[in-house]
Image (cartoon, rainbow, N blue to C red; front, top):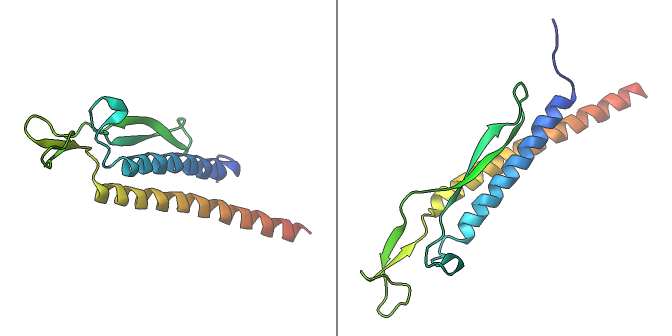
Length: 137
């Protein structure tokens, strides 16, 4: 039976997962923070939700990385404006970002669980090394 790879492959995979899911949580946090931003950079356009695309870091490894961060092109939400609201359009509506808080909270929960799983893997690996060193003594 041949074993391929090295003992560091597991560490590399876990660290790449920590980096990727950490960045994913940053993007989700940006979406949540801008969920009611109706005027981005003075353009009059609402904030557009960002999404993350994951990809394999290299062929033959289990490492993951962020492939692309792109804008979600789903339609914006429109709500009726109060009389005299300067954000209202010609039809009397305010255009809100395409951020859905339930979706963002579910994504945040999934990303944080994946981050925790990678951190737990590193802790287990550290314990394994510590026990191995104790056995050598």
